[in-house]
Figure 1 (tube, rainbow, N blue to C red):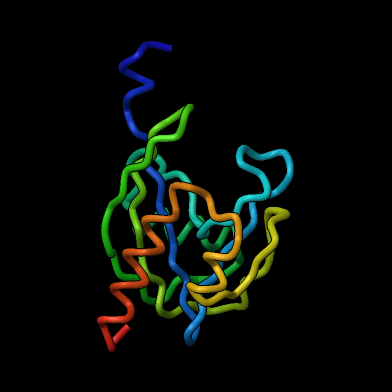
Figure 2 (cartoon, helix red, strand yellow):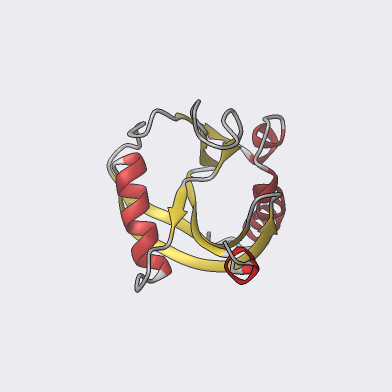
Length: 141
């Protein structure tokens, strides 16, 4: 693999799924990189796919829910030892269906405080802080 390919960030969509005062997180299953860490649901944005399309597809594939209302929040770049990811963060304020584990992950509804007590994937920590600050200052969310 050439260095140009390694430097190109992997585009990923992240869904902050909110229900009342809690957010949904999943624990990465055994056998996947960073297994045991907690993260927001989401996944790779495919070629010729918008972030919103990827969000809708990924949340259906992972959780069995249909996104009804989602708002783009911001982008965040994080570099792991093996790759750089460009995370597109979306707040999902309305969805239909009850989330369930379709990919052997453990799901949990948590407050921001509860989430910080878990082993959160490193790339998600700055996202937690930005979203926490945004939600506390925006009464409409």
